[in-house]
Image (cartoon, rainbow, N blue to C red; front, top):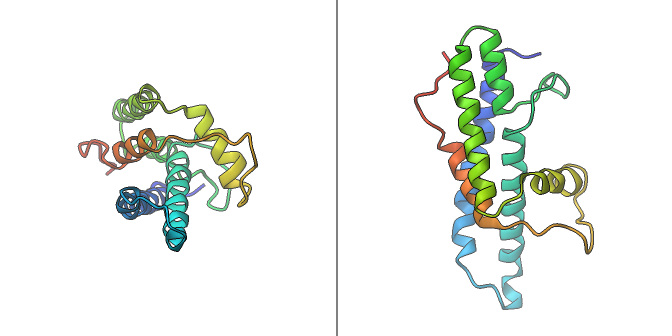
Length: 161
């Protein structure tokens, strides 16, 4: 399993990717795309929204010791590893996990469905590039945007030394 520094770098890189993706997506959401010549913009808007869902679900994934890195590169995995290496107190790690839970609750209160988002990620983003016809869930972007924004704006007072 990688050390805390390796996990922190990977999680930080994903957060930077999330900020960049959502930053490029916001101007595209404001465009009304009705003409055929705007199909590339529709594609980009769709791609960035899906990429946002993929990154957010990865950042919230449960810790496990599988994969190329030998561990899930997620915020909970990073907190667990930092706690195990005594670089973060158990109390501070729990406070951070509690904050992540509150963000997820706000996502669901705004109309998002965490289980549906995870199932969408597993069935259509992680294991297939081609969407399933018909019964695919329709994700509401505004709750997803809020979830993404709150994730990368987590309280700065939580630091891993």
